[in-house]
Length: 258
Image 1 (tube, rainbow, N blue to C red):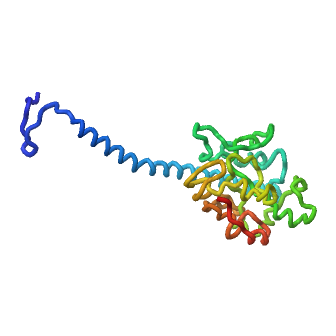
Image 2 (image 1 turned 60 degrees about the horizontal axis):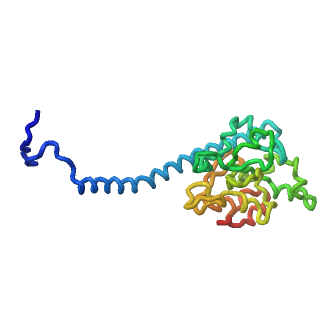
Image 3 (image 1 turned 90 degrees about the vertical axis):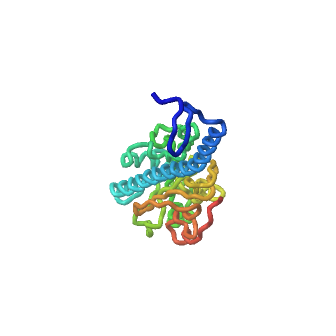
């Protein structure tokens, strides 16, 4: 049992059972608060980095799926359709519909929030929450069909992988705005085209995040050669429009809306 008082050779006398003073407690709390303030932003960035890496893996799997699909179908990519769309056609290759939902598109309540089919469907993957959108190949169809081109006329059409002349620089899959139900990235749909109105150019590392997209940051893309890349905001459209196959469309690039 320790004596009531004892002498330390360097620290002097101590009172057994002495407690912290209020000032000392406040100092400790202040230090903890400062450390927490320094650590929390780093933890937030680490969490977002983990989501982006998970998304990269999902986009890569979709890119590999379409490569395998083309290999099993004489080089043809999934045809344009209004039912049994690419999500369901590729499902045997990527296997789980959970892969269609980027972790960054989870709502604050932890639930999936990205839109998918705009109407009721019995197709499992078509109706699943979906963060990704496939190239609609509008520029190629327009070049092939001329005056006969319209959005209804391209239903049932597809292209071969050999028609993509620059596969390492042509996007097959990208990330869409989570409120958009679009399945295909169509240049010739809407007022400005889906490349401006439906794509999310800042799905990750953006300074702000909203239904209309973020600012800064960038998004993940799968290319026709099977590679996957993270591109900064707007770099999928300029200086070269990487969604286009036709050279005239590729060089007539525009800057993505902020």
